[in-house]
Amino acid sequence: MDIALLVIGFILMLVGILGSFLPVLPGPPVSWLGLLLLYLTKAVPDDWWVLGITAAVALVVFGLDYAIPAMGTKKFGGTRAGMIGATLGLIIGIIAPIPGGIIIGPFVGAFVGELMNKADQKTALKAAFGSFLGFLTGTFMKLIVSLIFLGIFITTAWEYRNALFPFLIKHRWHDQCNKNSMVYLWIAFIGNLVIHRHCHKSFVTTISRTGYGNNL
Image (tube, rainbow, N blue to C red; front, side, top):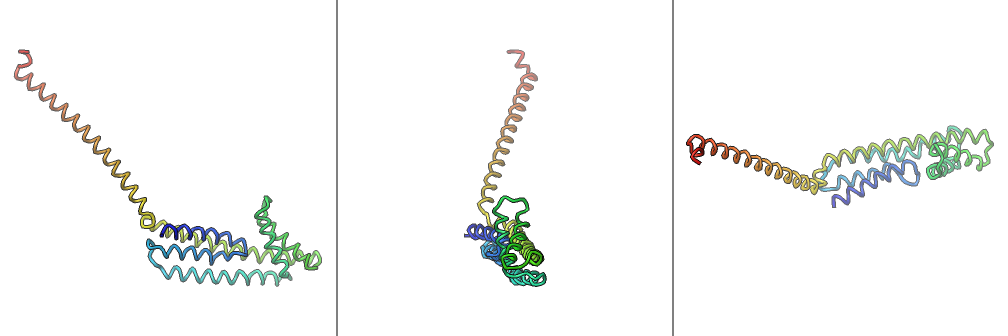
């Protein structure tokens, strides 16, 4: 059960990082669910302080993700069309094999979106920059938080690795026993050789002293 929760939690961590780039997925909240699953395992003790603080951070970032792009778009005269264009441009930039597509895509998408919203080229360029800046700020913020959550996940899982993976301990113990057995066998073998040689030497010395060997 613990292994299943650990694997699902790690998958949610990766989905959360992906959600930092794709607005359809709430990045930090999904990553937080991964942390929750880790702390629901029997191997990892409950730590409601960590879960509470990370949950608060995830909710704050989730709210700012909507507020910051809107403020950036409004400040530079952008519209919702520019934000939608930036999102579509990012998706195309990720899929298409274009160098720097993850950065160029949102800007071009925002520019096209503003042009389709019947803005002139100069206004569309300015609004596209605002939409792109707000989008980039929100994405960077979500990515940093999701990576921090992933770091907490990996660090905690490593700290309690012995409890999460008890079968690895048994395997290592078995290997160590095999190694110790081989060492003991070698020690016994060498000990027998030494004893045999010593006894043989003592026997030869005794025969030499008694002169029995000369009679033979």
